[in-house]
Each structure stands twice: as structure tokens, then as C-alpha cells.
Image 1 (tube, each protein chain N blue to C red):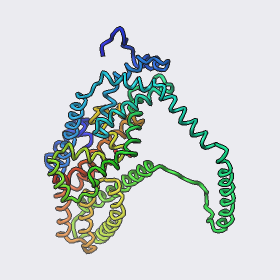
Image 2 (cartoon, one colour):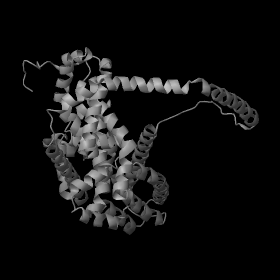
Image 3 (cartoon, each protein chain N blue to C red):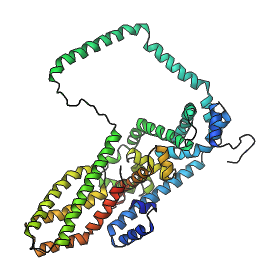
Length: 193
Length: 257
């Protein structure tokens, strides 16, 4: 974002220091820089704009509460996305899995293979829609890494830093996620197992 | 396959992989389907961008800052805590707490007296607690190790049959091979649920093909005829079992949980 008289283009650490001292403008600048990245993550989890925006707000409010514990030298973006990711997981566990089941009346497990093809036809064989539902069925870490890699477009190194794991583990879990998605999506699209 | 999809294979390995894809329709299909998954994910990313275009990003920072600086937020947090403490520790609840505490103490003492003679003495008395995530990872790692062991033993047996085989000449060796095949069939039955739990779909498919080979071998007489050995070799070549085992072992070696 371009530097202006009102919002000098400081590096992130300077902004963090100012927020710690109660500088509201610095806090708003941080939000402007990172709000879209956080939104992509929260929206990718839930595909609901209102829930995603609520979580964006909650992420920055949580950041404001915890900013005192942020230490120099740490990666701010990774820390922020970690807060967002934890909030998403908590919210998902409390609200979202049950809500999805109530909305469609069935879980993905309830659908037989022949019904899955009919379901796919109903959805217009839309790979995006089917993929989104199947991403929800992945194990937690695989789902998080898949979302961060393909929707947030983060590199393996950035994901590793955000989640506190090695790059090798990120690659391994990403590949498992893709393979498992293929197994989950396949019956909907008539792929041979 | 993982690094080929990522585009991070070295030049020589990438050429090998392309050559293999040229002759293996199963792997080609695997790759094509996984590429479709990734293309679908890219399309979802584009959808997210469209949704973002309809949001008022200029207003959001001020709204969040207002919430952060709201006196209600601090007051509500402090008020919630104070009210909760006031309710919990009010004088009218103290007799209830005293009674509950006394009941707990008496109940615990009674349980100890009744159950103590029946409790088995554990050798170490150590307790181990693990989260679900840790257990899931441990199970995946165990499945990986067991599958690697199964693949290695299968590979040795197949190589032994192919390289040293000329049927009818070595009854003792053939008898050992048939016995080994039966052991590996048992091992395969043991690892089946682990492969399913860990969702190792590809590994399961390849191990199933190996299992068919060993089922065939286990039904032969202890002394393999020329014809029987030839059938086994033809199966191995047709299914490219040795190459699949090699690729899968390499993948499992690299993919530690």
C-alpha cells in the first residue's frame, strides 16, 4: 500500500510496537495489510461470507488482546494466520459440521455410491462444489494444509512456519490430502476406484 | 508422484517418471485425476476472489478497531468474570460445597477400601496419555512401517523366484518360497485394516496385486513346474510389480508422518 502522511509505511514490527502502545491508527494499518489474507483462509473453511467476516474480526480482536506476547524476530503473518486457523477450527467444531448436516439432511457418509452419482448430477457435476464438500471430510491437518496451499496460495515454507511443522511434513500431508480427495471425489464423478 | 505433481523432481528422476507414465496406464490415470483435483482447487480460489470483490474493505478496519477499543468489550469481560465469581462464592452456596467435598472424601475412601484388594499391581505404574491426533499419527506411522516391511519381503521373494527360477530343479528352494508366500499372505491380512485406517489407497491397491501373486504361488505344489514358474513371471511382468514396489517403497520412505 502506498505510503501517506497519515499512515506512514512502517515495517510490520514498528506497527506492532505502536499497537502495543495503544496506537489505533497503527492497528487499522495492520488490518488493512492483512485482512484479505485472513479472509481467504476463513472463507475457504466455511464458504460463508458472513461467518468468514465474523472470524476475520475475531482474529484481529484476538490479535489485539495478545499483541503483548508477540516477540521480535517471529514471523507476524504466520502468527496471525495461526490465530485465524485456531479460531476457524474451534468455530468449525462448535457450529459448522452440525449445521451442514442439518442443512442438507444427510452427511456425505450417508450417501451410497449410486446416490453420489445422482447427487453429482443434481449439483451439475460441479467439481468445485463436490470438492468443497469433500475437503470438509479430510483430517484436520490435511484440510488446513490443502486450504492454505490452494486457496491462500501460501508456499510450503510459509505453511510450515504457520503450523509449526517441517516443510517435509507439509509436503507429505499435502500429497495425502490430494490422494484422499481423489478417493472421496471419485465416486461422485464416476472415476474408477 | 508427490514431487512430480509439485514439480520438484530432479531432471533425471522426472525423465524416469515421464517414461514410466508413458507405459503405465494406471499411474497415468492416477496423475490425471489428481491434476483435476488441483484444477478444481484453483477454480475455488478464483471463486473466493470474486466474493472478495463484493466486500467493503475500506470500512472493515474501522469497524474492527471500534470493537477493539469499545469500553463495553473490556467492561463485559471484567463484568462477566466478576459476576461469575460473585455467584459461585456467595455464602448461600458454601454449605453445598462443604457437603459435596465431604461426600467426595468419604466416597473416595470407601472406593479405595473396597477396590484395593482387587486392583492388579502394574509392573511399572506408568501412565500414558495421548491426544487423538498423536494416536492417529502413530497409527499412520505404524501402517507405513508395516507396509514397507511387507513390500521389502515381497520384493525379495519375487526377485528370488524370477532370477533364480528354473522350475523343477530345486525342490527345497521352491518349498521355502511357497512357505514364505503363505507367511506374507498372513501379513497382508494383518496390515489390511491399518492400510484402510490410514487411507493408504494406492499402497493397498499394489499390495492387493502382490497378494494375488502369492495366492497363486501358495496353491502350487512345493516343487514348482516350468509352466507354473512361467505363469508367475508373466504375472509379475504384466503388472510391473517390481517397479511398483520400488516406487511405492521410495514414496513411503520419504513420507514420514
